[in-house]
Image (cartoon, rainbow, N blue to C red; front, side, top):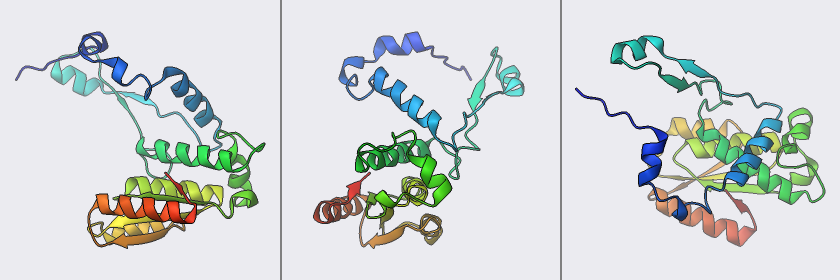
Length: 192
């Protein structure tokens, strides 16, 4: 079976970057990387060389990003929710720590008093909710995760393990999103 190998340059020629420029701003990405590196629990995910696989398929080298130690979720997916929670927390404490430093006090003191009345909210099927619950626990904020009815009890328990409130919605993920949004607006909560 033939294998197609794509280089960044060949993909970039076919990809319209103007449509995503405002979403994927390189300066914002660089700032986010810098802030994330300030977190006391941050460590870079190593690249692993898969020599046996590369020899087997006949290519010079295959590298894989090893996310098995990425916070408790062991996934790159965790970074988005935690970063958004850090940004929200920094905005709630004017003149306080940056989004990179916001976890410093929470990590050592069980949460920041100035964030005790803040509530972070999201709809989730599991991973995003678990990541946000973890971040809220580290920050000392409240957290409510809206779950569609088909989410397994095991996923719900993993979210609750970090102290988050879970709210089951009789319906789909989209209905959970709508309810989370409406409740956040009504109560002045921060939707992530």
